[in-house]
Image 1 (cartoon, helix red, strand yellow):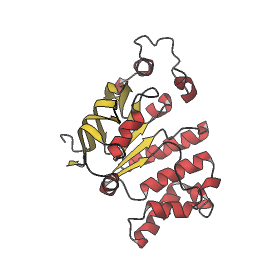
Image 2 (cartoon, rainbow, N blue to C red):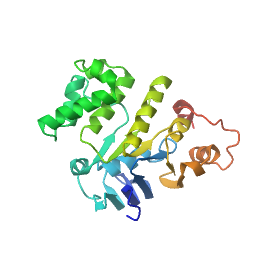
Image 3 (cartoon, rainbow, N blue to C red):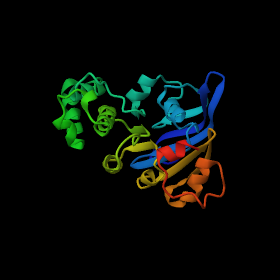
Length: 256
């Protein structure tokens, strides 16, 4: 890795399912205290990319390095132990377990005293979870479940946080709170890879932008150098996006 602040580096990555290739020749870097936002239409390969980085899908080509160490062939649990955390789409928490139990499970690798300290830190980060600590996770609102999923992922103190469409199904006020949490994580030095359909909101926290189209990278640039026209062209596969509104909801984009 040439840049000392680069925590995660993906080079020439290819992956798919069975005989179907989904992503190919993907290059991506996640840097300390920065958000790399990944955009693309449904089916562009965003979730496959994160799943491959996390070890849930096997890479067919290319390499994945975490803190300079090649983890391309490491199993998912080893990547997690090395400092990689994935928050999958869909608010994946254990509904029949309490908030506190979900957090304990997230920190199962920690010593008991460290685990309790990490849980207290989660409650400081997301005060609403403290109020709900004895409630079953399934009784929480969608926004609260997403906060719990993120808090659970942070229990192990990861170096890199992978977020797969965390705003899915959330009210705008909750999305705004989620973005503030991402900003705080950046300030703490976390390297974040954010897959998101809400372009405007994600761009408000992004430092670098990757856009995928049909499994390949069509934009790879600092966020300050990317405009809405380029992003919507990537979503729609067109070069002329002058008539496309600057903001699109998930529902709007999924119709394309």
